[in-house]
View: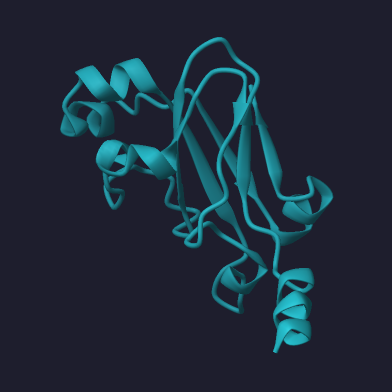
Length: 124
């Protein structure tokens, strides 16, 4: 039993993480709806700040729902990763953020891109 659990840890798919090298906290959200890069179908990332928020000069914690290689299939070839200013999200209604597209940065990444980045997106 112990051997098999070690093997599962070794074979665990890498998951998307964001490294924030800026001097301000950010929120991260992602979607597989590319080429639709609107925010209309997204949920406010402040909903779960322990998962979505990345403090200044830190790396996002790995969490079980983060995108991994298994996300990519015949119907998914691009992952859009959105970066938002934490202060803006925490002080602005989500509908206003969506309408005004208050996104700091968007990355549109293929599986090959993510593998090349070792699943670590660096902002900015």
